[in-house]
Image (cartoon, rainbow, N blue to C red; front, side, top):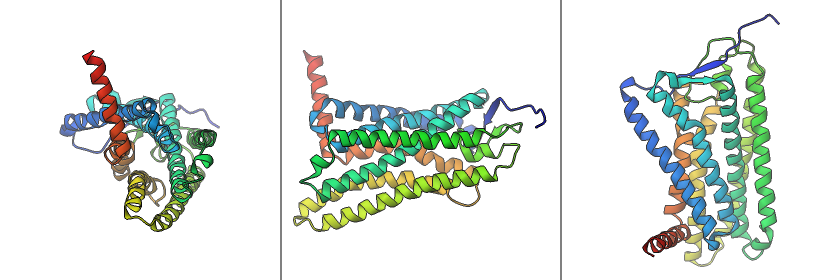
Length: 311
C-alpha cells in the first residue's frame, strides 16, 4: 500500500440549522441534558434507598437509568460544544473511536435490556406464583451480565469494522457525533463489505430483540385478558404501557437510520436526536409519572430529606 497522509482529526458538522439558532438550541439541549442526568440519578437513588423497590423490575430499571444517563453523556456534551464555538466541532481520531464504541456499546446493551425487561414482565404477569423463584437475584445478575457482555462484543465488532479502513480525507463528518454510517463515507477505500456487515449486524440485533419483545407482549396481552377483575387488567396494562412507549421511541428511529436503503445526512441527524437526546429523558419521566410505587418512594425520600434538614 502506498504511503498516504491519514486523518488524525475529524470535524463534526453538527445538526443542520441556521447559525442564529445556536443560542436557542444550546439552551434547549442543555436543559434536556441536565434533566436527563438528574432524573436518571434520582431514579437510581430512590430505587437504591427504598427496600420496597428491590425487585427484578426495578433492578433492570436501575440498569436502564444508568445506561440512559451515560448514553446521553456520550453525545450531548459534544453536540453542545459544536453549538458554542467552531473549535468545538473538532474531534481527534482516538476520541472518535471512543465515542463510536461507547455509543454502540450503550445503545446495543439498552436494546438487549429492553428485551430482558419485556421477558421479566411476561414472567411476572403470566406466572405470578412462580415469578419470585424464576427471577431470583442470581438469575437477574446473569441476565444483566449477559446483556452487558453482548453489548460490548457487538460494539467491538462495529468499531473494528469502521476504523480498520484508512481515512486520508476529507475529514468532515456530516453528523453531531461519530457514528458508523457518516464515518464510512469518508474512508478512502471500498466500504461495501463493511456496510453490508454492519447492516446485517445491527439488523440481526435490532430485529431479533424487537421480535422477542413483540412475542413477549403478545403473550402478556393474552395473559392479561384472562385476568378476571377489571382492576387487575388495568394495573397489568399500566405496568407494561410505560415500557412499550420507551421501546417504540428507541427502536423506531434506530430502524429508520440503520436499516433503510440509502441515507440522508440531514434527516439522519435530526432523527438521531430522538434516541440520543429525548429517549434518555423519557425514562425518568415515564417511569416516575406513570408509576405509583416510584412516586410514593420519591415522596418518602423527600420527607426524609426535609426531616433531616429540620433537625
